[in-house]
Length: 418
Image (cartoon, rainbow, N blue to C red; front, side, top):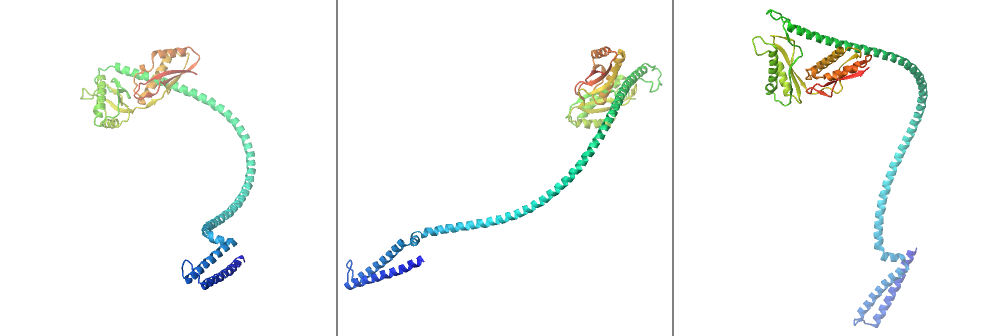
């Protein structure tokens, strides 16, 4: 309403000023006034123009003084337009953000509905689980009662088992005693067998050899099965074309020399007595050329040999490795303190024979019993046994350190009072 008033006021005020200017112009024209030496016509025109300037300026001034809207429209319109543009952009951005938030809100609402549905489903499952838990708890209570009854039965069975275990322990003790007796008897049998073989060999050597038509059995026994003719430690890295010349041939020559010196012969050959299959020689050559570590190689008698007959031998290769660990029991026997010294000594010798035989079978280079245990060690052990006549002792022959195939076969006696 105020805007219409301002417009009407401007119209009225402009018309009044126009009328006033017209009157002034007419008077100036009638009086034919001049300015700056100009003609009255031009002077009238200048006054009219100045009157228009005055009307316009005065109109703007009055409007500016009377209306804040006019002042704003004249002096702040550009800033308002810039602010309006920035505000419009902000409104657009906020509108987009609002749309995005509305979409997020819609998505969250859907998730909320899904979670609500899942919650209801979980609550249903929880209710079922509680029901099942109660059911299981009842079943567990029944099982616990059954378990208590079973525990009572188990206690009774354990008491019965304890009695049976005592019986088993007694039987085990009896079994151990019988096993020890068997071991002792086997050691005695081995000792007596060795003694018999030694006596038979001695008798064969002392028998009459004058009869030229004597049989093979009547000839002196030169070599027994398993007897080692020669042995050698071989290093790895020998080529296949040199292994025979470097290792195998020298060992065979040395073994043949031993056989010839003892009296073995191949018919028709006065200086050769050894028989080894070529196939075995070839296999050993291949094996030695492929060695990755040291190995013990030995030439062993393959069957009993008598005088004037060839010696059948074979070549054995044993890669170096631990055969007996420190403390391993190689042989054992039991004796009573009141046993005669000679019998105890025979027992010890039997242990040495068994241990030496076991070492040879496992590839350890051992062929001399006298170096295994010293006489002073044997005497000390016998004296300790004789000091307790009524006691029973276990004599064991154990490995003195880890024993490799290429190492010396070291054992020691161990005495334990039963």
